[in-house]
Length: 99
Image 1 (cartoon, rainbow, N blue to C red):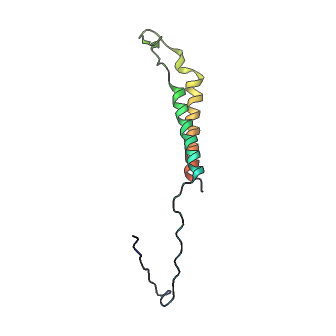
Image 2 (image 1 turned 180 degrees about the vertical axis):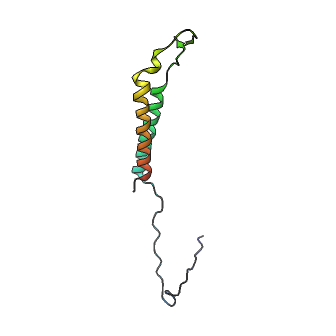
Image 3 (image 1 turned 90 degrees about the horizontal axis):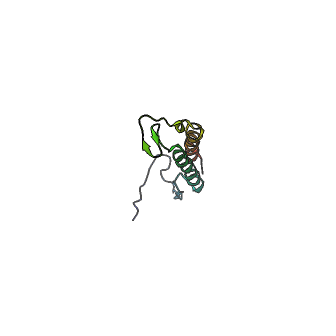
C-alpha cells in the first residue's frame, strides 16, 4: 500500500498534474559491482603476497639468533603493496563510475 502525497504550489494551482514515473534510484550497476570485485581481488592478492615468515623465523620455528632476509624480498616490499594500492584505486573508480 503506497501513500500518495500531494504537493501543492501556487504555480500548479488549478492545473492537472501528470504522475511522473519514478526511475530506479539505485546508484550502482553491474559494471560497478564487477569493478568492485576486481579491486577486492587485487587487494586480497596483495595481502596474500605479503604473507610469509617473520624476521626471526627459520624453517617454521622462532630463533632469536637467526635473521631471515626474506622479509625484504621484492615480492613483499614492492609487488604486494603495489597490488593493494592498485586494488584500492580500482575500488575508488568503481564507486565513482556512473551507470
